[in-house]
Image (cartoon, rainbow, N blue to C red; front, side, top):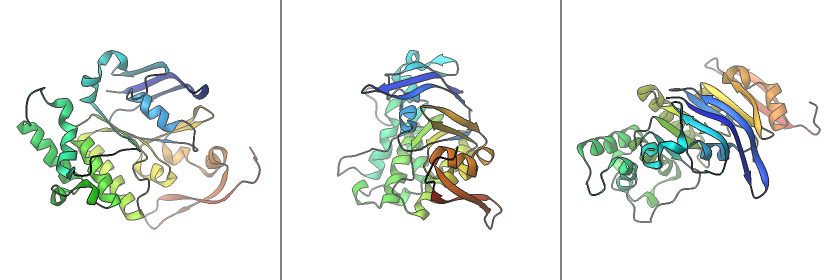
Length: 263
């Protein structure tokens, strides 16, 4: 099922954040949303799952208006991992992951065999099985992020929305989280839509990239074609070099901030 944004506009506190943003997110692919701070990336992500319902335009899933689908039904096919998240101090990893099954449970029912299987698989996918009885508060930053990611995976969504999933993580944990996301995409054909700040993560871990600038879609398409030094200059006002790493992949390296706009 393709998720499509049509002419999305958002105004917050009298300030226009997004204007006529349209894009069809390809089913089963990884799409990275990038842009400068304040460009409206997280705002767009919240619109796509109705966390923000104050917008103009239409978001459709499989051709049906999201507003008509209903939150409970929508939560069975779509999950979001926001930037801001919190859990009670005594919550264990297993308890946190089990929260992802709530959309699928009957009102008075306990966990079914399917629920238990989903929780088990989510813990395995995020390599947290041995931590399931630990309190989330006792985990390292990378382990906590994997626990929250496991909660969304237990939901078994067809579409997974991620808002800066590697923020505040060290390099090794960033790569581990991005590898898990890609594994989920490959194994289950899960549609991934993620806000990223790291341009090279966008180049290496996405199939499509959507760039937001000046409230609108600036460019979209194959990240290795779209994310050039020229585009970085126009979007982020920096100068950059591109070189090949030891695996033959092209890497963008920002050199300095442009002192004046040359475009």
